[in-house]
Amino acid sequence: MEFTHFDQQGNARMVDVGEKADTKREAMARGSIFMDPQCFSMVKSGSMKKGDVLAVARIAGIMGAKRAPELIPLCHGLNLTKLNVDFHLDEENHRIQAVCTARTTGKTGVEMEALTGVTVALLTIYDMCKAVDKSMEMGEIYLERKSGGKSGDFHNPAH
Image (cartoon, rainbow, N blue to C red; front, side, top):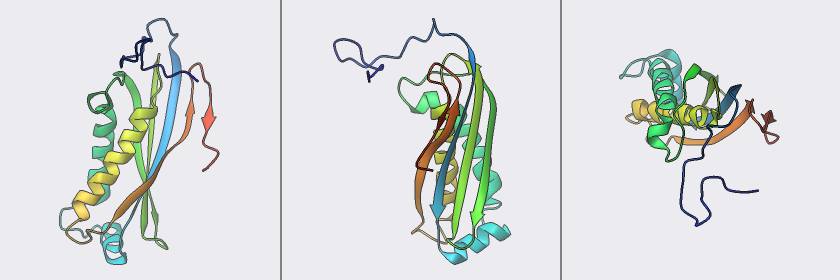
């Protein structure tokens, strides 16, 4: 496998996608934040002092995904046609799972946007809840699936 972000001299470069055909592309990423029972309960009930944690985290995740090219060197700016951030509450484990789906029709994939959206959503949850629980842990961030482009469909076999 060849690393495409380096030229023959080993210098970093942005991949030229100009000759690639536009295709429909979609990616979905997931990540989790674990917190203590009291904090989880406050998020679930909407009683956190800073406001509706999940509503703010949803907007933050969408905004973060839109800014992926500003945060990640050599990441192409894309005309995104869909960005969605959802949350699943796992009461048994005091875990909130964020899911970001990104879509475009273009020359390159939207994996980085989906992964950035999930990460920013989780960071926002941490920021809004840290007064109650500073020991929260974020993790399990991964690309679940992607479709479109030359490499075709991918479903993460580990998840």
